[in-house]
Image (tube, rainbow, N blue to C red):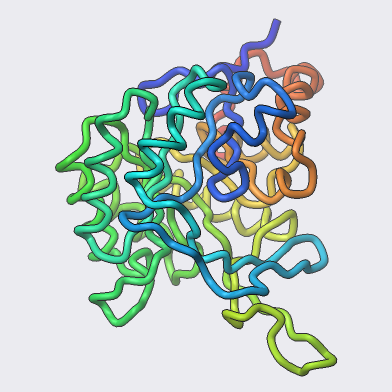
Length: 305
């Protein structure tokens, strides 16, 4: 029997498979299709201090081997997440869940995390620093090590649960950002968030997305994600949650060899709602094929020798 269990920041998971934030709602929608308790965990929809309607439409565009989105963090706000979404989730998911949090100032992040920290269902925080800093000229927090350090420090100060910072790939050197997280006490990092992309409508001769540019995800970005996870693994000692183009059990193994302790699956859930269930079902067979007895043993395996 192979062992698919992993330990992420002190919490044991049955397997390393985590549906990514923004592709799995608050979980209960998918619980109508299958028992979501077979997941390692999942990262719920990005939550902000105030409710957000999101960006104007169109905000999704398909591309070969991927998709673009500029949904704009549409969510009901932290108070409603606590009063409405989490109770509905509790009825169908019995494991610790990952709370994905976004903000537009350091204070926003701290406020939302402090409120959610009191909820027993939350196992980890995944802090999305790809949001624009309204006090810093609108540039994303995640592009500047100092800003990332400030967010990490503020969130760690008001939380008791593991804090994982979700890194943007739209930077010159992602290892510098990861080191800034580690230096301020982050318990882990997750990467990569979406790349920045665009599509243009040939009839209107204008960008397809109302926001012009959007986050590019899907199979096409996997080599970029693997390279960045590999680099970050060599730069920091904290655990990594790897993501970007994951759609098969083989992809999960590849990402773990690059250095990931756990792996998020994003766009694949939008193509096939059963994607994560299938990956988990196939994982033991793929492990046997490649003579892997214990998943933990292969974390960072591509770096050895």
